[in-house]
Length: 397
Image (cartoon, rainbow, N blue to C red; front, top):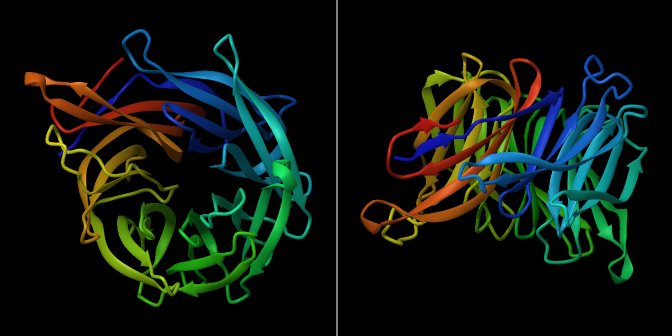
């Protein structure tokens, strides 16, 4: 069983929406929408902030190292692709999709410069929901957006982040719209041949779609799952490698349910195994999941199952963080859980992995995670977590 140390949170200004992505080791970037009541003159502006984990004092602290302000938005998603931080937002003035790419540059004073490289607006859609992911096609830097348009339909599009000779320039490469019912709670993750979207369809059921994307960004086709998936009200997705995926959902009964899926070489999508936490309800709020990757078991250097971290809001309104192992038989099992302060708008990122010398000289492996939430006072709160196999759960700070 794994345990958690939650270090003292870093709490900053009020936010109304949060997205976050891990960027390398011990660094994350948040994209936050600012509420007008606490940011006069900056109502709904997008704020990007770089956060580093500082352990120079012997304790882990999350420190803001630089930020940049962007025009007002209503929704935001964020990802990393080929060295670019990429945001996809619903523009507040036009309600259209806006894509922007940024580069991070470390400065000599320890701060980080966030430079906008390129931006592109798409005036064809009234956007209601947005998700974004890199495309795993082995070609040029490409991201894929998945959104719910004004008619309620799923629209996916590919975007090139560079033009000829590596010059940064965002261009729409291809688009595909499904007009077979409404889509909501949209999530997206890269696959070896393109990407996989997960969503709540017009019947309220979970639906997965595998997309094949050529190296030039052309979307060749789609394959939907035909295995029953059941009703959901929240959806998140994480890749497990080898075109296996884990879906974290709030099912029709209000419980956290994890399901593993696989995309086969012919593009078909099949359900594998599932786990349902039928002992504790979760709130109808955002569910977040991220792949931690395979780990070394405590001191024996044998490769452990793939691991994922899942963050949700429990029925009491508190942040609940869980770790799950996914075995070679694709069955998810919980390997530790803890709850913290009241929260909403949950996000999670992987901060890195370290090894330490423990009792009797044993080498212990630690996974480091960052959660970003909107706390009970409406402020952005970031918590740095250290997870490990031995000892007792404790909160420091």
